[in-house]
Amino acid sequence: MPNRKRSMFCSKRNALLKQRKRELRSQETPEAREAHHASQRSRDLHSLFEESAEIRQAHLAAQLSCDQRSLLDEPVEARQAHLAFMRIRNQRSLLEELAETRQTRLTALDAPIMCNGTRMIIKELYSQILQATILNGPAAG
Figure 1 (tube, rainbow, N blue to C red):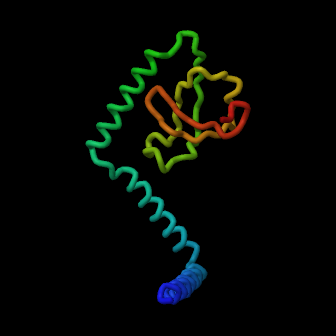
Figure 2: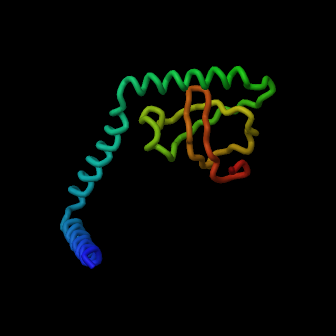
């Protein structure tokens, strides 16, 4: 029985807290709301750059070795297409400088299949190699 009472108390408390938050949000001015969202975005960006130098060095070494291996294994007849990605949807998993406009070489893809408007989730982004899941279009999968 004590767990049931505690659960009821917690759910009532959570409901009161949510109601209080709603009241505070309704009293907030649009300028204050925008300032709050801006500070939240800056905190998110700051957390992206908090990695230690050792982790960055290890990540860079892994990128270089993966790029070198894949370039050696790349068939000569592989089709190369240069595509500019104006927006990368998965920005939280990438550093800010990688999330900006980037031109990347994609190999073994049919260029007409990959066109403007193709959406993809970036899994890994190296200097020469891009691993992604294509969400729409003829090359989805």
